[in-house]
Amino acid sequence: MSATQAAVTQLLPLAADTFDKNKVTPGILGFIVFAALAIGVWGLMKSMSRHMGRVDFQEAPEPAAATASPAAEGTKAP
Image (cartoon, rainbow, N blue to C red; front, top):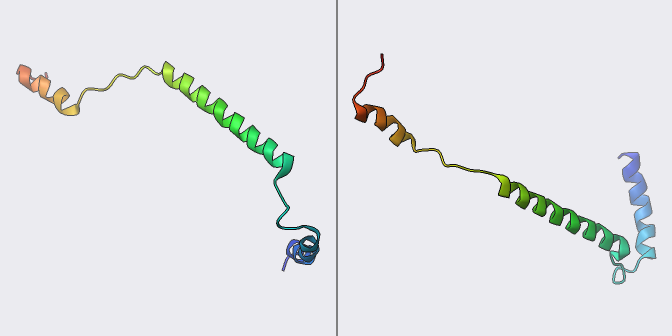
């Protein structure tokens, strides 16, 4: 057993006596972390939307149509 595991197993009973499991809440720190994550995701989505709007996508022709057109003309490669 490592030193960290030994310390945790010795301190765990002390923490169980201190806290009431029905009254423990995330508190203000949990709200701040959640709000920061929400603002970060909102910013990323806004940035992605802006970048996707700048994309100029043109679909490539189908490979079957591209190979059939030289044969249809009847010309041979030199």
